[in-house]
Length: 365
Image 1 (cartoon, rainbow, N blue to C red):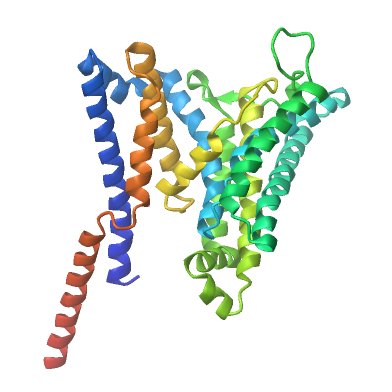
Image 2 (cartoon, helix red, strand yellow):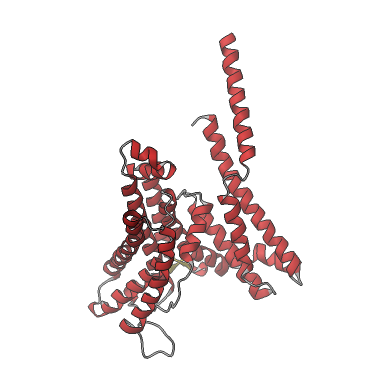
């Protein structure tokens, strides 16, 4: 790695950190201006999420779906195809896991069989639904963002229909499916922190996606296609094929996220609307700059902000919606390519100038 590449890598990290700090500063300023007890509320926002083992566990548990959905969006982001179908896949994969497990309950299969089978169901669900906007983009040049957003609404209604007519539990007083068997319910770990075992799934996913991105030919092709599809085509790559495969892979991981959420945190399917975790995954991928290694950091930061908002909402007079403003600022600053670009260019210019002077000195000697 030459000096220019080092400067670009370091400045990218600095740019993200500065963006996060500015957003965090705006959050504190907002609390100061709108709260009747600003000192107490700011304290709760900063340290409240770490005030108990259970709240720390809540941060980690919330970061689990953020991480896996963020990995899903890294595939879309890498090839510059913002297929947002992960939002619908997250919901429908949980629905399908419930439907299949409820219908297999009488078989009394052990967890070592049922859990992998549920993940296979979730992955297939994700691939099937990711295929629709991907193929419409490829064959009919349809806008993948618009198609995926519209399809999310269709999927939400379809999941509600499946719950009502194929697995409704009529013995309960609220809308919900029959209970999933214990063999597919993943236990919590780490004692009083009550962290879900989905953490293990998230770690495995991060390792797998990181290796795929940076240690395989397919990962290299994705990055080339995302950076310059014309060059990729010129050197013999199938840019459309790589882009298509990346979207299907992203859908598969969105399915894993939905299945993990369902098996870790619920005993029956009750969702009547999408959870927004798919869109949270997009925010995490933006924070991580489509680098799967950085996804857990972005996910933990977003989870910390969300739990902090919940804390100040329950202990003070601040609505949880203010976190939406913070997310918007983060996206604007991190996604803006020109943010701190002047500083980066100056450093690169100085490094190049210094290197040129050293070459001239050696030549003169």
